[in-house]
Image (cartoon, rainbow, N blue to C red; front, top):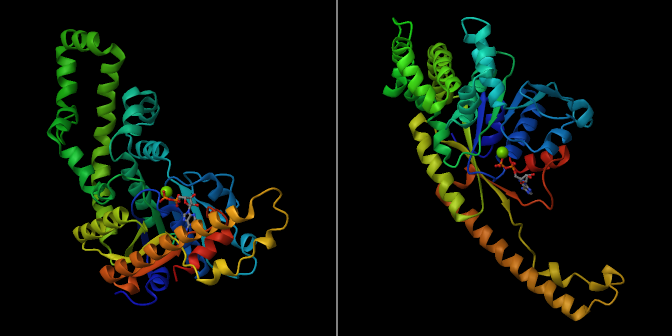
Length: 376
Ligand SMILES: Nc1ncnc2c1ncn2[C@@H]1O[C@H](COP(=O)(O)OP(=O)(O)O)[C@@H](O)[C@H]1O
Ligand SMILES: [Mg+2]
């Protein structure tokens, strides 16, 4: 239930926090800030990021984030804070995650090597719609069920439609239920899919015809690719069910992040609406990069002379440009303030946190902590 310390309380008890929202609003940054906060609450946290800026990794003291969890040395990064908590971070590498899946479920060790050389596998694993979302959820499955971490903070891919993300488990199932897919993937009591059988039986005719159209290696790749998929099918299905279960768990909380513009707020509300499909609702809404308010005397207390020697700058012109700029910002700030109030009325002010626009990108651990203060 929403209360004043909603984020603090979920940081203490949640097993999974999903940071969702439109692209570019600050999901990755907020995930990192929430993860850090969780670790400072004494929990063992892993932040699974999707597309982190390299500088974010650097500021955490890592060369780069990889597909394997790396621990951030909190005692070195934040010497003034003593915590038993741990902060780990990783970045989703969808190809690596898929390869790991194949390696785990392939009936023989050569299958992965064959897949890696398979042009269709290579192409589809990077371009198939939803593959990134699926692999993110698959990684989540492993981190969540692995037993080491108390809390997983999941950053979400920059999907155009955030809903795709929620529907990923069922889409993965649909993918395999698809009639076309059944052509290619053998059913339980068959060894080969229809396509393979036709391909084998037709031998030279089909082979030659398809080979002529698409090239010999393409046809062989196609057959091999679907054979690879066939042994992934069951694994992905059952993992899909488990992921659905995890997303619906009462200890899973969704934080919806957006920015102070109408269109993105609308997108966030729409997403929130759809969370109902999982019997979930947003635990908190974060309005990021809100223009901070201006005090009336901000400008009057400013003295151009304090700037020192301005060379041949026309001071009058400079002052009038400055005041025009100031008025513009003040209008924007007022507009943002109204939006925060309006949005707060819609979702309940206790559920809403506004984070101001910082003067620079948030890549530094001190900045992440500062940003985290607005989340508490
Ligand atoms: N409150 C803020 N003030 C200033 N810059 C911010 C703020 N929040 C995020 N940023 C910066 O905006 C950029 C995009 O943020 P990011 O978290 O990567 O967004 P997303 O993951 O939603 O695409 C990053 O460079 C980040 O440092
Ligand atoms: Mg991001």
